[in-house]
Image (cartoon, rainbow, N blue to C red; front, side):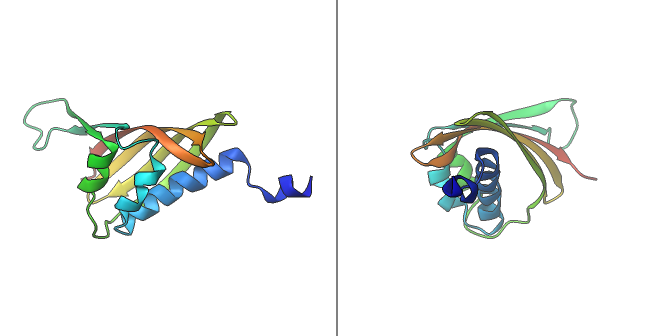
Length: 133
């Protein structure tokens, strides 16, 4: 019983894992996040406004987890997390909603997070970007 009190609740542990994921990106340690994905092939999908707004609509992009992490490079990135909200679906499954800002953009993200092999891991990630002007 005392051990249960010391162990973080599943939602808190999932939130800590997601928070660490974005901290690593901000610190230029995105590569360290590879173990936080269920596999290197996990889909990461996103939308962003057309670059110059000459046409209405959004651009859809897709990358594997590996490509997504590589795109963040090894240099620190300006990234400020505004909020992370985690809803526990079951002890081993959670959804996370993340809002953050980076280099002139506001980003809203949603992740499916699973408890696997003793760790919370990202099973899918979607990001929607908006320019802040």
